Image (cartoon, rainbow, N blue to C red; front, side, top):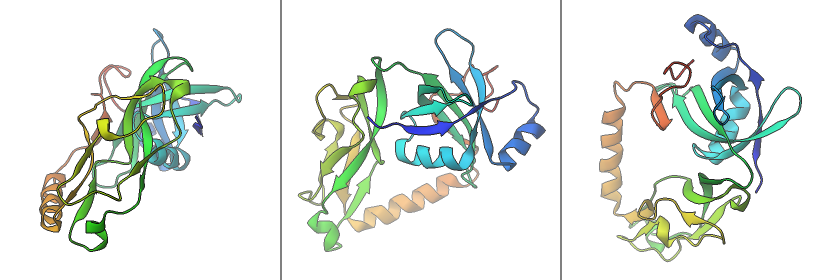
Length: 220
């Protein structure tokens, strides 16, 4: 498997909020990396490079974090905090993993083909995301998984158990919906509901709850 590489530098723990904001303004975002039973180590990552990597892997993906001495660490992105309106990255939490360790990781999905209902505008393809959660050893994780959707009809739904995975991999959540084809009117209703929910939203945390990352603060 190819791992997206992102450089990082150690970060002084317990920085005041003002200093954290200054770091973000200069293009760095705070994070922590957990290694075994050791306390989480504070780090900082270049926002632009890290955002590009996250766009490909998503939360739950495996990255290679490269330190200032050139050493690499395989790490799984466990949590990611975003600002609800600006969508700027605020904080990232990682856990170091070993090559032969079994993990649940997000693998990019490549949607192949186009349903006839979509091409004729009688239906709309709704994707639950750009990746699928897979359980496998780190070395068995593929770079991406292809999914042929050309035969889907209006009303069809694809779940994780329907996706053909490579040897050594199994769906972490077999009943989770990967994509579906629905009438266009349902898409409009869903978009309106999402817009209403976004109003007044607080910083968005993707992943597990932000507990115990340096004193329970997601932005430490």
